[in-house]
Length: 116
Image (cartoon, rainbow, N blue to C red; front, side, top):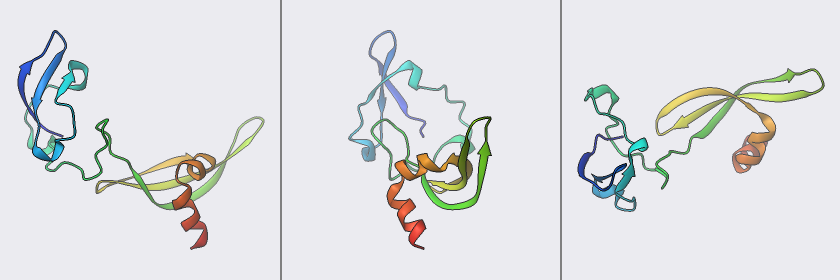
C-alpha cells in the first residue's frame, strides 16, 4: 500500500502520514518499524486500498476451494492436510493447511464445502 507522504516527525521513532480519505478510520501516526523506504517502482505500489482492510493494516484471505487432501504421517500421529486455494483481494495462492485448523477458523466455509 502506499506510498504515503510523511507530514511530520512526531518523536524519535514515529511519523504522521498523509492518508487518503478512504482510510479515515486509521490512526495517522506510525512507528518507524511499520514504514518502508519507497524506491518508487510502479509495480510495487498497490493501486487501490483493499476493501476489507483491517484496523491492523492486514487483509483477510478467504479460502476458495480445496485442491487436494493428504495425510501427513509423523512418528506417532497422522495429520489430515488440505491444499487450499486462497483469495486475498484478487491475488490467489495455494498453501497446505491442517484440516482441523481450517474447520475451526473457517467453519462456515467448511460447512458449505461439506454440503456441496
